[in-house]
Image 1: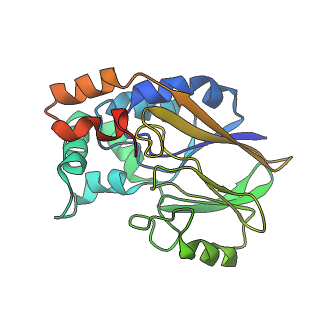
Image 2 (image 1 turned 90 degrees about the vertical axis):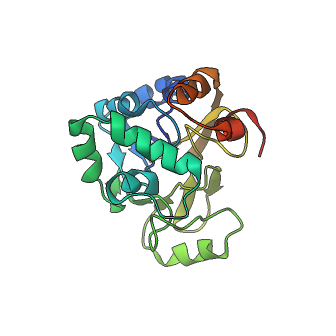
Length: 224
């Protein structure tokens, strides 16, 4: 089975469109959360993911829609959640509310654990490639642990479990304006990174039309 793994879409349909063929050719799609936040194509992105029948976990920005943003949240985070709250349809809101923060099960004959930040703190942890906490994942009895949150791709294809972060579709932070994903061949146990450039200007223009501040270009046009 070929499984497309994505994360951190952040209401950016322009980015999502660039990997439409990757998602459409996959036997299954996994989304690791943060479908909303930062940008403004909220219902459009959610419709794509739901139409694909994706297996999803909930991200911290998704959760903010229901619990509110933490008091210390920067303007970019508050903006994205407020926009989502105004635009999201009742059906999409209800669907998003029911997503688990952590999901464990079998995909393509392989055991997999899905979460946004980490299995212990799915809403707040950031596990980068140099995080000492990565070795704590070795205690989990799964073939693959998939997580997002950092907006930076990472693959550990050795030992057990394998660990993968597909990077971000909607707001990459290792390179500006690329949509990142990973295709997982569950039979051959191969992880294939995907990166596609897209034009960020329509995303920026729409966000500005909704009142976004100067921060809107930070990750879309500037390097890390």
